[in-house]
Image 1 (cartoon, rainbow over the protein chains, first blue to last red):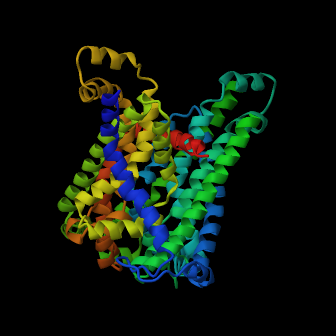
Image 2 (cartoon, chains in turn green, red):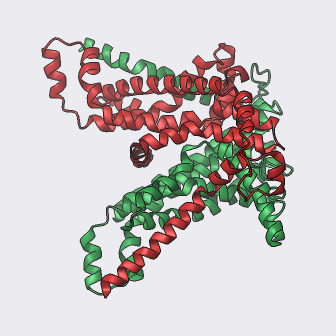
Length: 286
Length: 283
């Protein structure tokens, strides 16, 4: 019995040390120091909620939250439409379906930082050239305004992540019993009717999954933001994650940045927990 | 008659698919084509094919990226992190799955719940603590990847353990094996498929990670994404060099994808479904 316990703890020690020193202790440590004047090394004063009150009155932080929320709403909708569309396409009996899966998924393997740089070239140079060639003024000066920066980030994210969301929808589409579709065909249902009454209800749970993934991804996005717009012009396309990094490591306001990080954690946690609640409720219904 | 219509339908879907596929790889096409142009040619037009191949772009980007060195750093850090994550998470997943006590349930739950914490929420104290311990180096980085990567990996191994019968353990113990031998020679080989998935998921993430290495590593020990960031800053208005550098940087990934595309897509799909399950057990 005693012997058994020793091996149990021996097997767990490395990961407990890992999670403890890298996630749990910094998390608690950071939470405590967000109430002080901590400078990254020492804290001299307890400030209570001062940082928390200040951050809600800071325009830059609030605008980064709003920008992130808008971005999240748009990308969740767009990614689900694109993910389902691509999945429907590559689950058809076409010759190129495996090749297409590979192609659509490819951007996910290349880091967000590098993808952002590639798209910076496309928006700045390629769009500009096409715009000049065809006389479309709207294509010129991309990434130089807040709204083109916003849509630039949306396009980059949609292109990068659609293949990832596609994988989820493929898994659900391939689980639909073939005889169900066949029976509907025999009954004379057309493609649209089959989609509406069979395919769509059966892939609906995939939407719950991908909503969680896209939402949390949209809130945590950093690399793409940094390499595509670098937050500009005038910090107007700066998302929450970037705003925290800047406050901490460029402005050197560690405790204040940590307070923002705590709020950030709460937002992400609320999204995740709402999702769990929603999932559980659904399960009961099904 | 009906067959014909269906064939025609499939044909138009095929065409649509190919068109979308081409649209998808257009960014890569534009990157590569322009990487072969001179600065002047890019200025004159980005859509055309280059007149001559400006290979000197690649030579200079290769040198400035210190590509072999950053590739070595990336391989070393990713490789070590993956090895550590696979070894220690599989051990933990095994121990937690075999020991059915309340405490072991609480430990498992803690690991899963930790997935809820976004990186930015622990980043500042993490850098502070590791800085004071003089651990802001490659070794410290590998340890950090273990801390961030072990949760999902333990979850995957824990799930896979339900497929490994307990009689294995008993037979080996009767034959006189100790726990570590039993794990290493019998259980670990059985977990190989899930180790592949764990390896793939963590490789994609660690190989491409920028923020954590940027906080931990100096430029001399930079990984590919980190070096790319410095390199790009240097050549902001010189697209011919910047694009050659980007092309070089993604070559290792494309080669890897070419050889392991089936396993990668399968691994990601498994990872997705278990991330969802993990999300559901958090109450």
